[in-house]
Image: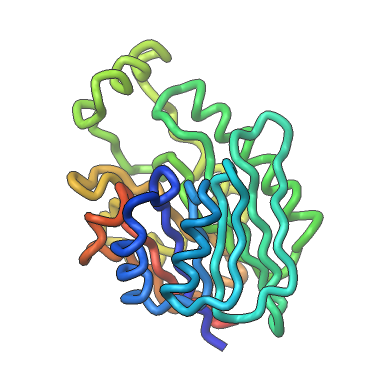
Length: 246
């Protein structure tokens, strides 16, 4: 079975952009969608109706939500202490694979990178307890991978100031911590020569959206692509569509 997995930060709940979002989602033909910033359950319900998804879930004020056209036998939100967002745990029917939706703290600064490290550690600890077998970590990690650069001049003035207030340099450690924990960055493995920036849609200069699988299951990854066509009117993030043999 091939799972088409879409990760999409729909910005501020997606209110007022439901038609554009539904069009983009239909064009990617996903089996499962993991949303970030899906804070408005009514929007998720409308998107499910408009895209033919049979199951969906979201909670008021929580970032992570989902839609699925294949059976999901269980879905749960887990919010570790001090984490800004709850993680989403999806148990898919008929397969040993699990999907964990991720949205780490935002803002490019030294102290938020430390917070993301904490949030990541809490997630990985839970994954080790819940699912030692095949699984995917997918979502908006709000940080850069090793070797990728952020042009501070492209940030809004208020965010540029936060970088300087936190020391003027951000040590991007979160993604390295994922790799050190035994995961593969699927996009980078499949596209070593592509930039793959996902944010913002009007001037993409940062890759914030990722799919990770344990290295031992990297062979199951068939595709991982940033969908830049038609996405600029839906959100400030481009969607990430992947295929996994599950």
